[in-house]
Length: 467
Image 1 (cartoon, rainbow, N blue to C red):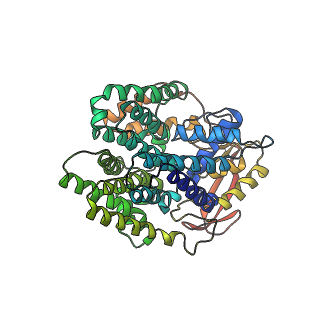
Image 2 (cartoon, one colour):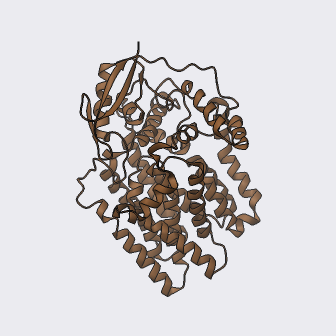
Image 3 (tube, rainbow, N blue to C red):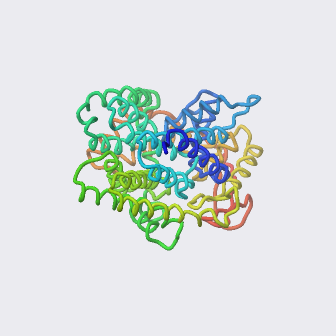
């Protein structure tokens, strides 16, 4: 049976249903993206809070898509970024299904490739961020590996989705003979798509690479547990939801190594899988904090590689690998069974408060401190979304980033420090930070403005005047 029409439709339907399950449990960083989308749609600003342009949106393409759909779906002047997110996720998932259908693989492999992604509890725990767009871009890179021009265009869009996806674009391109033969053509179209934004960002915002790179790297000691160690613990720890979320990626590692040993030839799916391995190793070396969404790209890449390479194997091993992959999808069930719908918290969650509690605090904050500048307590996205006020930290106020950038440069090796200096050539070092009227603080335990998180337990917020 040809998958040209039903697989995109099925992917869109599954995505819409899972969005309804997870939409009330979005993480704080997901709301940062929604803040940017709302300000772009309503005010035409690239900013987390209105009136303060910033460069802390990790995914320019995702923000642009969300902002555009938010603009189109305004009702009586009111913006609805969460509705826009559901629409974008559904459309992007259909694109993911179409990418699989274009490769004309066995139906079972294509369907499993979609299911391994859309039903993965790890991905659903990062919904609201650019995770589905990443999945679609990775599949399209493989699907167009036989067409250098289209590959270059998709590679440009992939880098606009996340700059670090250049790792996957490079390795998939190297594993594709048509792209290697016409590398200059692919590179030219890639540059035509990607470079204008980064050049604009370099001059207008003062940095080509989003400022989140500095902010997150300075948090690398967070939790006392690194990216590498946390990933290994999740893969082989006691939590079955985590084990099954990572298991398809481990199957992908075995598939890539087995392919290279047995077939001894390159394939775009091999490049995708190698990209997942390299990505994991690079993030382990640079020492980012172990936020669960940082594991999404390698898990997506290796899960996709497992399904794709299995489809190219001879009949007996193909059936074995695909059957194992199907069992892994069944292993996702504990993440859904017994959990109230819609979710109050996703399977992977580390914020200080649930999205619902943050919404209540944000709305109260808007009433208590109208027109005032409030210092964020360490998490800002959900508060800023529901307060729709001037809430301030390095994510929303570039004036606070100067010392952090200097600190990161001082910590870096000479070459990396030079790269940072080039990135911040046009940064406005003289810009003063926003002067605060209040500081919002979080503390564990019961108290005023009490909240709850499945990760942190009971906590509370207090609002303190600063002048």
